Length: 362
Image (cartoon, rainbow, N blue to C red; front, side, top):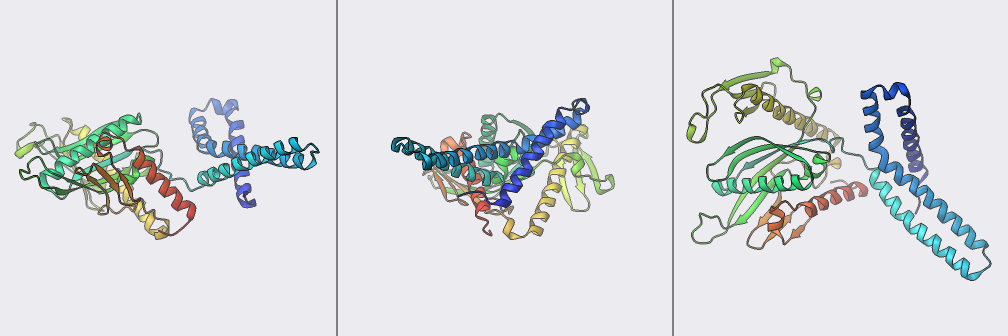
């Protein structure tokens, strides 16, 4: 196995650009320009893994060639055998490095390092669905903590018995989108509700939506496109939470998207949060339109974008979590609900990568 000329030419150009950036960053006029330096640093960081892997590949390739040539010329049988072993070892490393390079050359999701907005909404199952929505929120909170990211609660519609009709939150941290983007879809739970006196298993469902958070400049919303309404915040049963008109309702007139925010006591804070949610939803629509234009062949089986797709089942009686997209069964539901999502997330990332490497239509 070896890299073909086209791949080598592409990699050579990446290395050349990497070294060009190094030279630019050493120039006094660039070091004095913080924004220029930061932009170059980000560009260099994005190609660092690829450059390092390719340089290792070239070094290993040279070592394999030298060992082969020396073995052919060596008269001593024992030394020739040693050199052939060195050659075989280098060739084995070459195969591993080639696979690594092919993975690194896959088209990178430009949103991978973005923060994300997550919505969890009770769907089928009434109060039991709302309770499971709270369980999922706790699961994601623990997972975010384990990754060293930061979770910021945007809004929560509580049911009064410990559940959520809907909860929205942001996750801030490098790689948040790359790890959470596969969580969107319907999560189904099978368990005996606390209110069930006869011990019967009920099936409920919760819808999860995950959206990359755009920069404000990426989604410009003209003032004339938004209708803004205010009212007093309401609690359970309709009682007034406060007497100031802090609740904000934004309606995006071109699309009909409505975002209501009342968790903060300041109208300004609620408006700012509502705008962040609105931008994320508009950006998600933009991404969906791009995916449609690119065609079905570019869609991944592990992230279809269809919010009605059943992606995962949590079976409490069997202590089992099943991800239906990759056929993964884990018999450690309690640990998963404590935020141990790594095995599931890694499996989904691997399946998506394998799909891209195979180049098969989805």
